[in-house]
Every structure is written in structure tokens, then in C-alpha cells.
Length: 303
Image 1 (cartoon, one colour):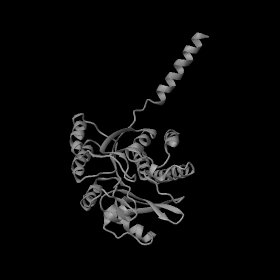
Image 2 (cartoon, helix red, strand yellow; image 1 turned 30 degrees about the vertical axis):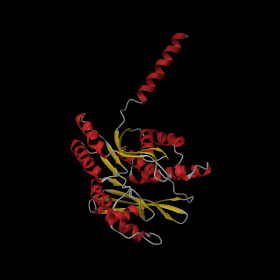
Image 3 (cartoon, one colour; image 1 turned 45 degrees about the vertical axis):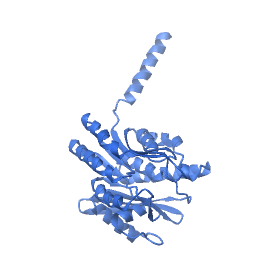
Image 4 (tube, helix red, strand yellow; image 1 turned 135 degrees about the vertical axis):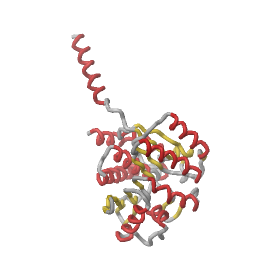
């Protein structure tokens, strides 16, 4: 009987080892680190891990809580970015994907551009840039005009970009639509964005009555195709949802999931997280409950 148990335990361990024999692909995650409020790296890292990637954080700044709170501690890490990335170069690290979110200073663009260029020469990483600049027709408090201008050049390095409607307008020097954005306007914005260098774009979180639209474009040579991914809205706009959306997209892109399938997955996941956060009466500025749904992403990735 004892021998039987020993052999059975050995079989279980062998099956466990075989299940995890594949070495996870690596994704560099560039964003701020916010301690409270469910946004930026605190959201991106667990999502990438749940979707089977090794997430390697590159913090651009540190916040005690995000800027929707009445007070917060903030530390700019611009001066640390170059030596941080130099160590990655010394170690000759390469990445399958690069996700880049909030940048708080013009000083951060140059070292990140050098990092991305070295990665391109070493391989073919998929680069997703979420150009965090503003929302609801206005820039965020910490975002300057000079930073907006610098971002226009920066997104040319991206494979995928995920601006919201405000950011898409800022990047293309287009007046924010009043009262709403119709398909012709979104088509025009998408064409302008893709002409700036990215291969794929999603204009995220467009509020249209009871629905949220994600308007997508993809460039293949001289051909441009567009599609829309809509979800029902409960009327709440919460911090961190853009980070959730973008993290799912970069993980799927690295894992070769079709673009349209990935956008639908991200939109549905964000919708469900917003709905359950409202049902749980989580304060809006505390973001969305996503922790207890990470297993869904794991199961879909390993199904």
C-alpha cells in the first residue's frame, strides 16, 4: 500500500511538472506604481501573470494613491530610469512584449525610446503604448502641453495603442466632439492615429448612452480595417479600467490571440469588473474589483 502511494505521488508530481514545462514569455511593464486605488502596475502585473507571462516592472514614478484622492505622496523616478534600463542592457535581457503606460515627465521618453530600439534590434517585441494624457475632454493635472507633443512622436514606436477619446483627439490635434462621436468621426480619428505609425489602435471607453464603445482599427499594408466592440454600461467610470484593458491586450498579443478576440475579452472583463464593483458598493475612486476574477483569465489562457 505504501509503495502504491509513493508511485501515485510521483505520477502527480510528473503531471504537475509537465503542465508547467513551458517557460513563460517575458513582458516589460512600464508604468507608475500606485499603492492604493487599483491602477497602473498594481493592476497590470497580476493580469500579465494570470495570463501566463513573466511580468517585469519598470516603474516611472511612485504614488501612495492615485490622483483622484484628495492628497497623495508622489515621487518622480525619471532620474532612475536610465541606470535602471542600463542594467537590463548589461544583462542582455530581451522581452517578447513591452507595455508602456503613464509617463509623467519628458525626461522619460529618451531612455525608453533607446530601450525599445535595443529590444527591436535584439528581436521583435510587441509594443503596446497606452498614451495616458487625459479624459473627458481635458488633460490630467500633471500632463503638460510639451508632454502631449512628445507623446505624438513616441507612439510611432508602438504596435498597438489604446488611447481613450480625449487622448485620441489630443494626439491628432482634433477638437473634442460635442456632444458625441459618431462613426464617421471615429473612422477619421482612427485613420489619423494609424498614420502616425502604430499597426493597431483601440479608442477605448467611448460613452454612447447606455453603451460603451471601443472603436478599433488595424493596418495591413495599404489596407485599413475597422470594427467596433460595444458593451452595456452601468454609468460608472472607474480608475484602472484602462490599465486592465491594455494589460489583457498586450498579454494576448504576445500569446498570438487574434486582435478582435482579444478586444472582446478585454471589454467583457472590464465590464464585469465594473458591475461587480458597483454591486459590492466599492467607492469609485478605489477602482474595480478584479482580484477574484484573475482565475478566469488564467483558465481562458490555459483552456
